Length: 327
Image 1 (cartoon, helix red, strand yellow):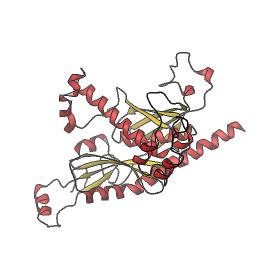
Image 2: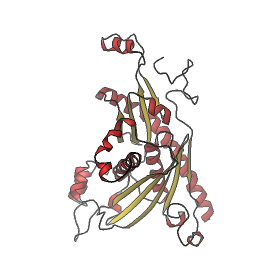
Image 3: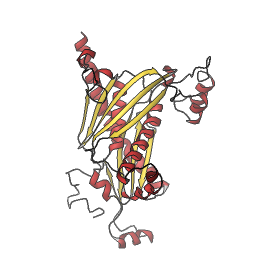
Image 4: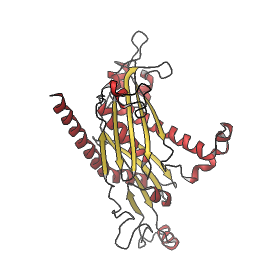
């Protein structure tokens, strides 16, 4: 077999095929009146009633919840995007990055013409999310200087990296030119981690934006993928010699935590816009060539479309329920 994780029937440990996703579940918080929230704001991370949007995304045993606050006045520590930053990000707003910056993106009376996204991620104590051991050595300098233990430093660094991916990806999803001088704060809690935490965080954050009524121009969805090289050294030698008769590497979608740890090849989190463009690509694991990366990205397109359809169905159901309540 190309991978020791597959049974003779070609099934993974949880009974899925290599290209099969785990069961997906999406939920939104009910609209609770403000007076139902405790005075100390103890309901949830900030109290659902105090948030403008809330959503939960579950893939198998991985669950992420996202809260959205805003749009609100941007703090002086998180200034809105300038015209130059919009140009530097490229075609952020779907076909008018440079043009928008040259026109609507200029400063009006010292005010920024675009809003900004502030993102944060927290891996709760009982979640099993962790940084791969291959990156543990980077703790040697900064972690000790900060006075943190190795595990605490890796956790903090992982949260910061995920928050930056979240911020940059959502900045291209939201129509920021509608929120001049404003900030939209997104916070994600990884409640339980069993692989695919970054993809689940992106999906939960996008759903929370919809729940908050934020204008989005590029709907998106994310999945994880991994390449499992042939276990046999003889097979790898045959392939390096040009003999294609050996077993081909196995590609698996939506990796669990065990599969992620056992994957000796490249691992990736891929996010796609509904229009077909790549929204985000985060690589990890063994170095690989561009051809393999392109193949992985293309493999994830149909999976992202399936995840997007699940989120779209749940969002429409949520809107219908709220419309009935209002009537």
